[in-house]
Image (tube, rainbow, N blue to C red; front, side, top):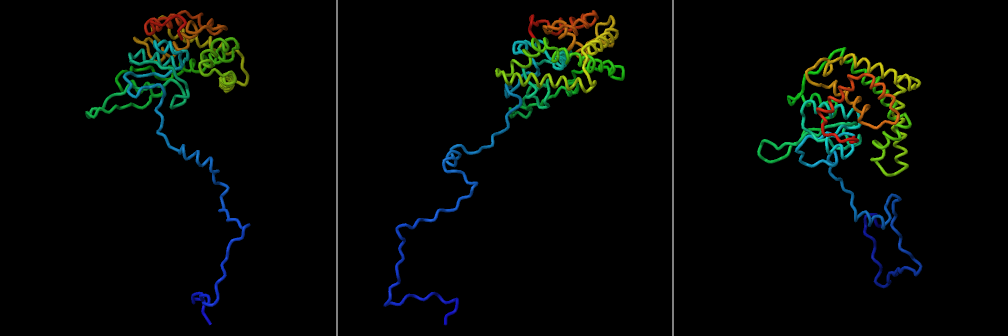
Length: 322
């Protein structure tokens, strides 16, 4: 008796072991393939184009690796940006003008919110500088968002002491709320102004596709409507314009016969904030429905203030260049 550990017995010398041959209809067994496996043609295709992780793209586009000048990214046309002419967007124009007041050297660049690290314009790309260790490396300052511009200029000794306090905040609120709401309505929700002002400035340059333009138009108008509805369940154009008229009157009284607001010797951030609306309403844009502009024109000293800023800080602006 053999145990299970014994080797198998060899065949007897007088008896030949039978030879097993495959029959003519026998087929080789195919290997099992997972349902996740790629078909051979696709596998070959992907082998020609392997997956690669590319380095992060520099922000923003159209910017040289070495920046010899500060660049302010704003809503603008290419011709206007090339000449540092006023932006057609009030927020961009506010900061553009503020930097001009302080004598900051910069070049405006056409941009969009999608290019901004914070999702909004404007933002500043400071000029690059070479390292001091002699290795010739270029050093880039971080992008400066608009809410950090005041701090940025002060850190470089270019800032001025700005008015603060409850009185200042109360007047700034007139711009940020009453005048802004009327602006949103007259630009985006007034049919004629949207068609002839907002559409050519914000929609036409972005794409040549009619469906995309239509979608962008709806998005802009819906955003303006949603913001207005946060302060009132209904929207009354007459009420919006009357509130803006009251704000203009208050600002006119504040300015009085002075050259700059709050009796300052030089223009400051508040002057830039007022100019950003008054300039665009009385000459910067070609309005079809000029209701809001007519409200402003009742206050001559505000018009004079806008013309004063334009003549001193935008002296080379061409007619119709926005």
